[in-house]
Length: 463
Image (tube, rainbow, N blue to C red; front, top):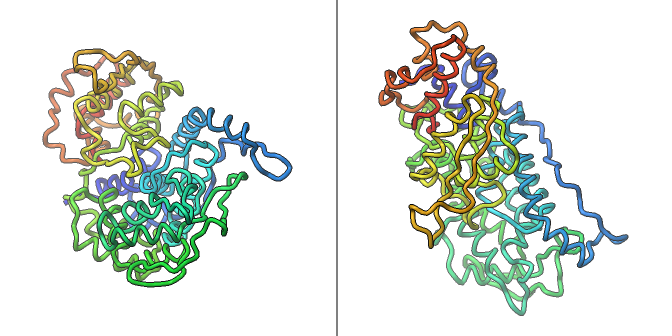
């Protein structure tokens, strides 16, 4: 059974980006219910991420065609800059739970529209509703300009319905593939979403002229439905709460789903009017959340891992190198692989990405370098070196960590470092192997090299 320190580590891993010396000082000896309340209090204030300036428009507030083309051309670079701004926010934010939930919804409502300003708008919508009401979030994201463009609802008109959004809102956002809907439901729902478009101001607009106002039949009901009606009908279906709770369970509790727990959570989620904050609090204060099987069983996402290094060791690389690290590890914010988002779980790890993960702590010693070996393209062989391999220059600051372990007895140092960083079962960690490669020239070097050695273990990748 996990002791109180491991339970605290587990909570901080899942609700944020792991234990740090500052968080240990703040919460040591505090009961977990109080810690959960404090985490929610920290995340109560919503601070938008405002990095990209709103595009200049004409007197009507509209963007002219040439301006739209210019915005399209520079969008990729600005989305990369927004990515880095969000990473920086995750590192310094007190509202770690809101950041973590925003990242979850960023993956759930996976979008990568070619207008950076609209992606920032969507990001702040996710941030606003991250811990609030799922019904409000679903309605808001359905009218989100970036989402409308990403899933082609701009082209969804009564004379030529486009089914993309109607399909994905059922399959990926609310019910799950093939769960509680038919192909005809998708076709009829697509008609209800006709006329939902983005205007030249970059805002949602309903165009009555392109909306299909004839009768539709969706989920066995007939009526002159619009998009809001479809969203409300989805929210009435019990499959929605189970689908959302199953996905949250998989990302925050365990990739091996306990269906009985999911049903309990789903019943509460639905009866509580889809209160996301209440759902997450229910998970974090439940005894079963701290069962041994749920601790140290999830592989860190690449972004979580990098944020953890930045928080713990002040990891610093230049902007392009940070983006390269994300790409090599398999998760670049604002650039999901497809509309289904990142698969997660064991999908984060393969032979290439694991080597990169384990090499970063080694590179962090003495401002070293990390070689980024990108996966070969389809037509390349494994022994061919991709042309765009990169070497990353790494800077770090170990001051806070060395201070934290400064009073630990020399003979207990390895065990204490393992205890602080590892929540996965550590019986497979070879302590002798860790200690054989240490620099013992000074107390500081002993501490730093011990920490780096523990960070190079596969168990550090698991939270």
